[in-house]
Amino acid sequence: MFYEETDNEPGKEIEYKPSFLEFARSNVEIFELADKPFDYSEEMIELCWELMPNKSEFHSTYNVAMARAWVYYNIDSESFQEERYYRSASQSLRDRRGVCVDSSFLLATMASLYGFYSCIASVLVDYEGNSDPHACAYIRDEEKKIVLVDPSIQCGYNVPHRKVALYGIETAKNFYNQYCKSFNRCDERNFERHKMRFMSIDECIARMDAKRTDFKNPRVNKSLLDIIGSFLFG
Image 1: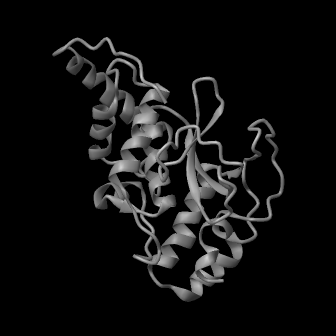
Image 2: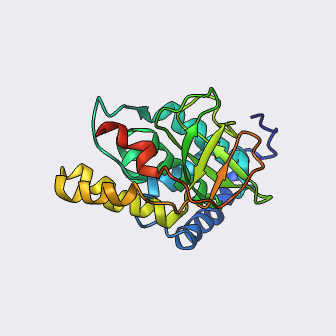
């Protein structure tokens, strides 16, 4: 993605900061960003401010693109073979590490601070045709169009994944609070119970094909868990 020249005057852009902080904190209320996994922190708001190419443009997809690039370059993309632990947005920022869904939680939260509706998506088939378990984030841009933003690949803004299932915020929160927390606690009994529940979830809000135009609301056989986590347990 290309960036425009900004018209920020040296020394003047700091004048916009109080207004941006107020704007970002209002989005904490609008998008309920106090709750895991989309949990903001003051450090995150400061980071969002620093990343803005034009300090007077709070609600801009340029900001989301910059946030996506920052997450790609600064959050260590670990695998479950290295550390089997799920993180929320604030935890990934604090630890500077996380698997694909952790980084997507972080990116979605940062996009929300910029005023965009944002959540996560299960990537059923990626842009290269692979069907390995993967997750990314998405936003509704200024024109209310869906844009996939993948923090795990270098050119991940508006990435043309071939098939994805978009999930709503409540489903993503349930995935984290029930499945992920049981996983992190090594609570095998509750984990298995939630695993069976999430394997039958069909609450995606849309499914996108490679043409990026086929939006439906079908009953999807593969759930968020089925895509991201089931390969760990068979």
